[in-house]
Image (cartoon, rainbow over all chains, first blue to last red; front, side, top):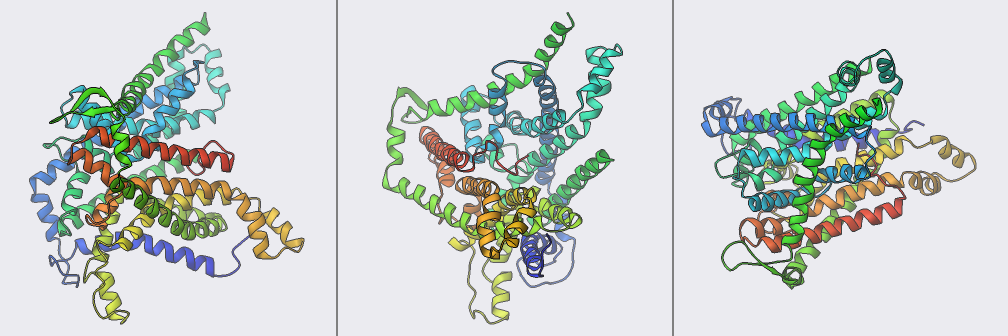
Length: 258
Length: 286
């Protein structure tokens, strides 16, 4: 059944336009020359240049990449192993642990942030990159785990059985049959967790130390002081990054389908 | 023998997962619950004394008002989100396959970009003499700038903006699975479009709609940064209160108690949802 009138399409269009409005505004304003005015005063890359010259900004970018990179690799290893292992064990605790593992993306972010903050200080861990990685890994694992698990459920078990019947060992079967089959799910889970970790501000605010800034944390602190053109430029770069990651994951999905 | 070997290997595979989940999810949550029952020390940290004091404090009028304010805002936002998100998801499900994919992609891009950055765009729009003011003055809706930034409406718009995709995706995933022949059957049997919508379409998309309500209602109580950025310091939500108690007042046990209550409210919502929709998983998530 198709939409009969133009009204639904009009409605969809309007909402999508409003959804993109703030994003568009940021991108356009990041190329504007003047510092405060709302009126357009000419194209300029001035704010990008200033951004690249800012040392603390470069550090924040570096930290964010390291953090998201390590967290998503951790999540990929732990989450994939678990999803594969879970299909073969029959422990009673299985369902409960799987449920607990998804809590980090189910409960409000602010609670997760505070939980980590009080727990890490209870353990006496120094706040900084270590605590950031520990916290981010916790909320990245569920993305990889759930994606790989749903991929495994859809797999034809006769494939691995055939390999085993032909004499391949357990480890061999995993690396030559199972892993290539679940690789797309692992990859998109990793990309998703990378994007989530790279974007996270709420949890990072709670678990980072005074000396370690990530990009979103830096943006947040600057934003509270009002509008600044550097933040426009920075946000535009981050938007570009996210779009690239998304397109990447879409490409993986398409190739997977073929 | 083979069987035993298989099990031995699987055991090794899940150990890191078990370890991580127990040490970095279960234990921290348990610690937070314990903390909420501890007495705050005079200067720093907590004592070993068990007390209900933190929970009693929540019932002080100031804090009760914060909870009421948060609930009110969450209800208001959820209402508007439903009003906009339900038709969007419903209409989207009726698009051609190709357009479905396109609209989905268009929705996902902002969804995965930082909510913080998108809020920032609203600052530029809302600030006094900003884009919106300029536009309104240009078309003579108002003569003076409205100065919407740091007001209640700004926070409501920000919340709606941040959470709308959850409602859309939930409704869409329900409406997509809808068997349209049922709708046609009802129409053929003489039901009016409105009556058909209420008795067939709405009923069948109810699980998606309800999961959208849960997915928007719960976060809207904890999204402290929206209230922070678009509301200045004027609007204090439970999320802001927790952050304030944690970072500024340094009253960790009280912050823990607030979080426990917020989590209980959240679980209550989920339980009601499960009962009402008769399903276990939230529609639209994974």
